[in-house]
Amino acid sequence: DKLLDLSINGHLSDEEFAKRNRQFNSDIESLEARLANLEEEESKNKEISLTVETLRKLIADELDFSEGFDNAIVDSLLNRIEVFKTDDKKVIDLKIYFKVLNDEMKYRITRNNGTSVCSVSHT
Image (cartoon, rainbow, N blue to C red; front, side, top):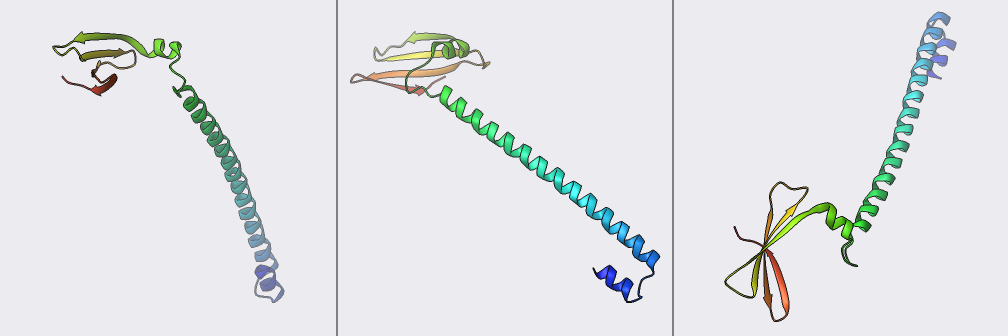
């Protein structure tokens, strides 16, 4: 509109008006295309976000062990468990070897009054 006002008032030649008008129209088209691309990316990001949330829920459901462990999960993660007796009859030491870890995990289980307590262990 400002450009048209300048042309009407004689401050711009018809040639200069046409040149600037083409440039502004080109800029508008470029910005509209960029906006469309950004909106498309945003839409894809929302889809990815929904997919990530769905995967997160599925994984959480799979790793919910409130009903106990699924043998297939144990078999896929666990290589072996070594149990060692100690001088105390109420204490055992464990070395657990997982398929996904290079080093074993060491635990000590202590039984007190019918309750077993497991702690990350000793060396």
